[in-house]
Length: 337
Ligand SMILES: [Zn+2]
Ligand SMILES: [Zn+2]
Image 1 (tube, rainbow, N blue to C red):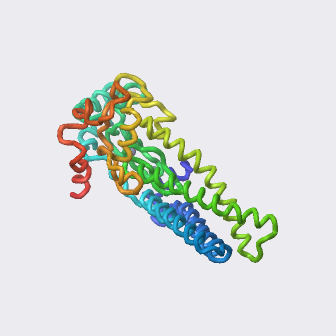
Image 2 (image 1 turned 180 degrees about the horizontal axis):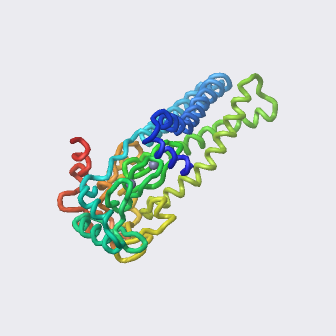
Image 3 (image 1 turned 30 degrees about the vertical axis):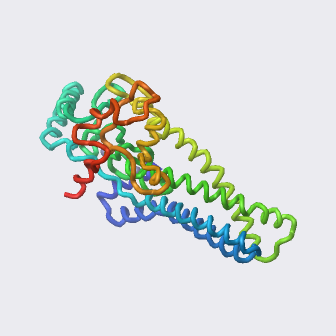
C-alpha cells in the first residue's frame, strides 16, 4: 500500500491522468462500505421489517432504533471522511533562506544547530530518537508535537493517529472524535442488527421462512456479526488509547521528549484525556460535532497528579498565553486568510 502511494505522490508531479486514476482508486474502500450499508438498509427495512415481521409494535420499535443508529453512523462516517485536516501553521514552516543554509550545512551538528535556533520559540517538546528537532524534509517544516508526515496524503498531519483507507483520509487531531464515534455507531449498528435478526435466523434454519427474503436475512445476520466482532476489538483498543492519551503511532513507538522517552508523556489523567478528545459539554459527546480541546499544536505536558480533574490547573501556562478553551483555536484564524 505504502509503496503504491509513494508511487502516487511521485507520479502526481509527472503525470496528471495517472494521479487522478490513483486518486479514484483510493475511493474504492469507501464505496465498498457504502454499498454494504445501502444493501443492509434494504435487507433490514424491506426484507425483515416489511416482509417478515407481522407485529406492528415490534416493527415500529425495530425501525425507529434502526434509523437512529443508521443516521448517526452515516453522519459520523461522513464527518470522518470529509473533514479537511488543517495544515501545520505557517510559523512552523522553514523559510527558504534557512532551507538553503540547511542544505549547505556540512555536518549533522550544524544542521541541528540551525533547526534548534529556528525552533527556539516554537512550542515543541518532542524530539527524534537522537534528541534532535523533528523536521519534515518534504513539507519543509518543524514537526509540531504529535504531528507526523503521511505518505498517502503527502503532508504532515497534526496529532496523526493513522491513515485509514476505509475513510480515505488521515485520522488526526481534527477528526479523531468523529472516527471514535464512527467506530462506536458502526459497532452499535451491527450489534443491533445481529440481536434483532437472530430469532429470524433461527427460524430460517428450522425451515419456517419462505421466499428470497430469507437469503438476504441469512447474509445480513452473518455480515453484521462478522463486522461486530472485528469492530469490537478496534473500538475498545481506541478507547484504551483515548484514556491513556496516546495515538496509534505513539502506542507503536514511544514518543521522545527533551527529557527522554515517555509513553505517558501527554497523559493528563483518564477523565482529562477523555475530555481532550470529546470536550467538556456532555451533550456534544455523542454527536460528530467538533468539540476537542486545544489546537492540535500545543499539548499540555503531563500533570504529576493523575486524579486531578481540571485541565486548567497546572496546565494553563503550557497552552500558550493567548489560548484558552473558550476562544476559538488559533488555526481557525489562520485558515481563512
Ligand atoms: Zn511532512
Ligand atoms: Zn494520510
